[in-house]
Figure 1 (tube, one colour):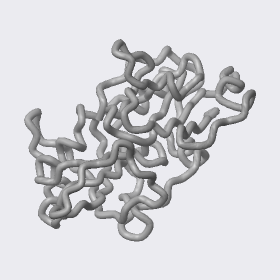
Figure 2 (spheres, helix red, strand yellow):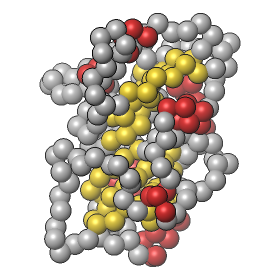
Figure 3 (tube, rainbow, N blue to C red):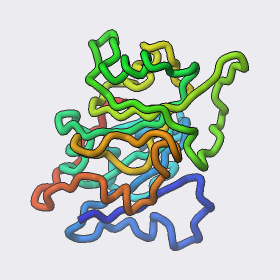
Amino acid sequence: ELSAKFVNPADPPTPPGRGLRSRSRPVAGRATVVLLNKPFGVLCQFTSPDGRPTLADHVDRPGVYPAGRLDADSEGLVVLTADGALQARIADPRHRLTKRYWVEVEGEPGDEAIAALERGAALRDGPTQPARVSRIAPPPRLRPRDPPIRVRKAIPTAWLEIAIAEGRNRQVRRMTAAVGLPTLRLRRPPGGPRAPRSPAPRQGRGGGGRPRGRSSAAASMPSASPASRPRPRAPRRPA
């Protein structure tokens, strides 16, 4: 059973005594999970030798660690847990959990570029595995990024939803660059990792699905056996 807490730094400040600190004790028999809406520019770790923003600026629950990572230039869902088995289940590429990304790219994605991404992009460290790719409308209620993305008046931008089951370093950005569509903004939407049997991302209306609250995100995450809860391992490199 999961005990989940959703943290959105864009929300108004929580009154004293009602925030994460007041609910920091794990519940017996439950896997403690924190779902963070990570802002742009925040390192997906709890310390920084050069004083850059980190998860510690937004998560005040001891003993949790990120299950997988987003690089500092990316935004959106980061799952943190105190359950080592659950962390490994989410983060280890061997389990082939599908992770979705909303990607704003520079240029107009044609059918050939999308087909190339779906087949597998040719990267320096080898071709990627097949991906699920669809054009989507701009995600609803998405706040402007600070700092804003680079915009060139003569070149249009577009949004894609890309779902992959690999975990290479900066993989999505390298994939879009390989087909001539540089990534301008990358966001992992709510919903959590999904098993490979989940349905393909929806196209068209509503930008591939409305963002969902913490209950749907927690429900879509895989469960870990309560009998074995090793300490979380150090997270892998950003995807």
